[in-house]
Image (cartoon, rainbow, N blue to C red; front, side, top):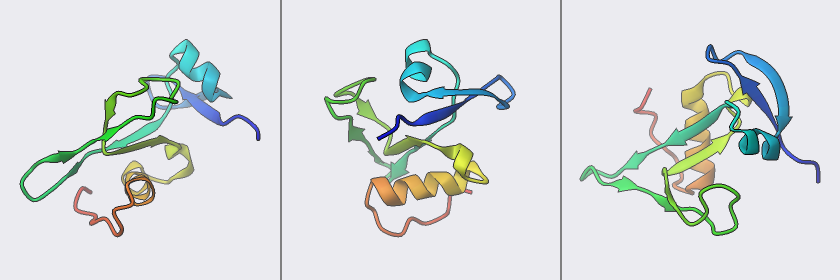
Length: 98
């Protein structure tokens, strides 16, 4: 399996180069990511605990759903909904956050 390739962006969110996930994280290069916070009706936030096998922030608390890959989506909000639906397994997610 080939290693995931990330777009590296500048301060204007313009793609300036690409590199492997490992290299981008090791060098702290700017890249696109999505983080979504999910709240219940009482205003409590749903968090997830990261796997101990993660290369960054292993075992730490994290946003409700997150991931790399907004470059594959037209807009960030729809991409965020895709991550929540697929990763948090919450079923259909309301699109109230637009």
